[in-house]
Structure formats: C-alpha cells, structure tokens
Amino acid sequence: MNAACLTIKELTNAVGSGITPRMVRHYHQLGLLPQPERSPSNYRLYNDKDVIRLQRIVALKQQGFQLNHIRHILEVEPETDTNVNLMTQLQQQYRAVIQQISHLRQTASALEGLLGRDRHCQIMQAEVLAQLKVLDVETQVGLGGLEKLWSGLDAGVHTHSEAFVESLQRLLPDLSNRSEIEQHLISQLVLACGDVSLVSFIKLSRGAIAASREALKSGCQIVVDIPTVATALDQTRLVHLGCQITTLIDNPHITTATEAELEFWQHQEWREKLQQVTPGCVLVVGYAPSVLIAICEAIANKQIHPALVIGMPIGFSHAPAAKRQLMQHEVPFITVEGTLGGGLLAATALNALVESLIDKPDCHCYLKG
Image (cartoon, rainbow, N blue to C red; front, side, top):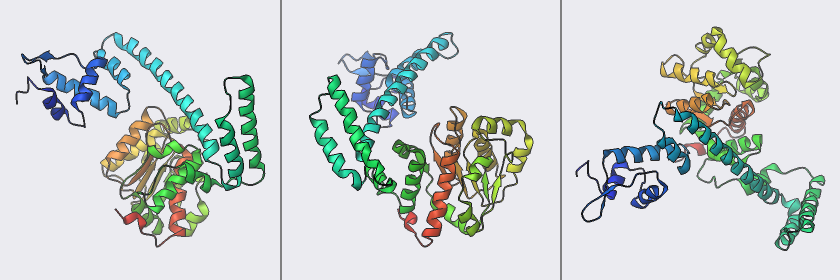
C-alpha cells in the first residue's frame, strides 16, 4: 500500500475507530475534509495529511464536540489572531447547545411527570394521558386545559408520601448488567440530585465495589476534602464499622468549592496532611479539583496508597481534568465525568456503599462478570 496514495477504504482502515467510507464522504460534504484528488479511474485518493486530519476529527468527536464545532476548530491554525474569533464562535455555539439542553430538560420533566407517578397516581395518570390525546394545544383554551390536566395530576400528591424507589424504577435505564450493589449506588446518586441523566456519567473502576467493601470491613480511615462532606456522611454506620473520619482541609469556615480550591492552593499544610493518610484509606473529594489532582499525583509517585478514591469535585476546567487523571490510574475509583459532582454526591456514594455492606454483608453479586 502506498501511504501517500490511499483509497477511501485504505484511509478508513488506517484511522480505524469505526470510521466508514460513508462517513468520510459525509465529512467531505460538510467541509470537514477537503475534497481529495482523483485517480484516472475517478477513485478518491488520500495522503498522510488526510489521515491526520481524519484522526483529529475522530478524536474531537469522541470528546463530545459536534461536527459543526469541529469544522470551526480545524479551520483555525494554532497561535493565530483568529483564535479570538473562534472562541467567540464556540461560545455562541455553546449557548445554543445549552438552550437545546434546556428544551430537552423541559421535555424530560414533562415525561418524568407522567412516568414517575407511583401506583397511587395511576388512575389520574391514565385520565391525563387520555385527555392529552385530544387536547387542542394551538389555542389559549387548549393551553389552559393543559394546565388543568397537570393541576389534576398534581392534586394526587397530597394524598400520600412519594414512593421514590417505585418512581425511579420507571425512569432508570436498563441496569441489569450491573451488580445489585452498583444498581443501589447509582439509584442513590440519582435520587441525591434528581437527574436521571446522571447515570451515563457515573464511572466505576472494575474493582471499586470489592475494594470498598474490603476497606470498610477493616475499619479503614475515611478522608474527606472539607467539613461539609463529613457532615453528610452516615457517621452512625461508619462508627459501627470502626471507620474514623478525617477532614483534609480542617477549616470549618470552608463550605464552597471556590473556598476549598483557594485554601488548598494557599496553605502547604493541607498538601502535607494528604501525604500522611493511612494506606488502605478511602478518599472522598466533593469540592476542590486541586485536591483530586494532588491525590492523583501522590498515587502516581507512590506516596499514598488508598483503597478507593471517590472523586466528584465540581468545576469547569480543573474538575473534568482531575477526573480524567483519576480514571487513568489503576487505583479503584468512583467518579462522575465532566463538571457534575459535589459534596452531597460524593457523600451519597460512600453512604450507599456503607449501607450495602451492613445490610448485605455476604452479597457477592459484584464479583460476577
């Protein structure tokens, strides 16, 4: 094969990642790939530059960029003045995406309002579904009727407490390939934030459940980043297991991610304290991205040896980077990809593990597969 003169099939084979000739032709139509030269037989011919550009497209797409965003990014050469214009364009596109998410969130909320009803509300639910079919939403009368439908459905909430587990079963994606303990953990995290879409962002390493149970059984040290996380932990159950809670940034006035981040950067004592955590501990980070980054560095340098890291700091640049670093290490971990996270989610993750261990100490479902 001549690397400087590839057919479209040879191009896709060189790039891999599931790229097909049909996708390449689509990228030509969108302007993502320049039109190639043609052979005397009118076959498309590609070179090494085309391979590199297609690899970049694939890499950006895997990171979540849409094709129109990728085209703008690839059009701008590094270190040029047009980067300013590119950032403006990407900001506009970001706002458009957020608006789309907002509209989808409204749709999801409407569906949750119907699907999330428990058996006590099923009679009213059926009535609402029947009336929705004949509702004339093009008129003000129709919109008023829609409000009445929701009011009627909402009236049922005054008759009984909400059945969270029953409602959640109707909304969660299929988790049958997960162990019972993982299903419980995921359910608790969703309930903690009220967002079912969180499921696709929750990441557990293969040995995370087993590592957590062994560590907790042994009465391991629990290290949290700030006091707010400690207060959300199930301290009664942790005491029962013999686990002691240690707060890394031991300052009661630190209550937000911004404060935690600055405090950890400005005071060397917290970094030194991190070096002193006991081997086999469980580290729980819910606020400061820099704490998780420091943990990853300490693990890489073999300075600390935790049994499990629950890494769920919040932030828009450092937090996603810190979580990616965590997932690259061999240490068992539980995290939430991207900017999502927070102290409540981090504490909920540990509480769910503790609850499962105490309620089902002999369960080995997590060892299957």
